[in-house]
Image (tube, rainbow, N blue to C red):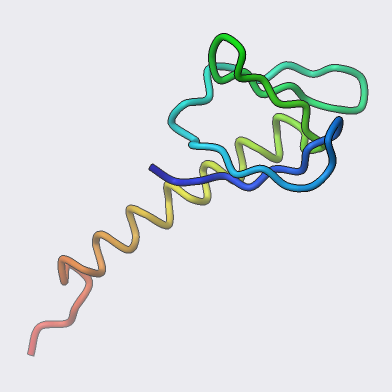
Length: 77
């Protein structure tokens, strides 16, 4: 469950959200709204493109780390 750090608009500061709980992201003017279910909505500065790029980077990193840990990339002697 990777946590995604986003910058909140209405309350300021940062919020860490469980990336697996994101249902959809809406664009509202200069901000985005991340919907994570009933009563769990965040207005953030990041655009949907930035959020999706961060999520893709996190998933790619997880796969890479798993392959390295499983010794798939180690050279055979």
